[in-house]
Image 1: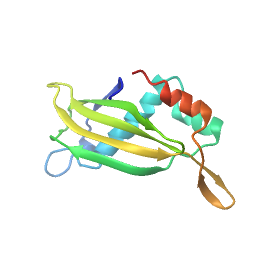
Image 2: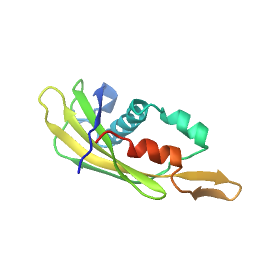
Image 3: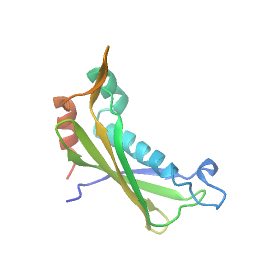
Length: 141
């Protein structure tokens, strides 16, 4: 069941448009990232503060995007982002991108992040810290 999403607006810059005059496919992952950043801010804990406080890294281990319609330069987009799943050592954020002018759904996708810490032997997955788990599960439904 889809939870209530946080909505972030993004205006498509010229730099995101390819030679075919549509938004380059990889730019959608940047829009997902902006949606994630703003979702954490809306939950009351900017992501950078969490990283520092919890000494946490969140490497991405899976990313997916299904493209349904093109976006163009200067389109105003709405990135809808929500916590889709929280597991023992990871969580998945889901995203939908709409063109604001006509409400058309342009893309859907998700990003899975693993909680990790670095030590002298490298990067290691750790359980989702309690503070982060509470924050993620507190996403409005």
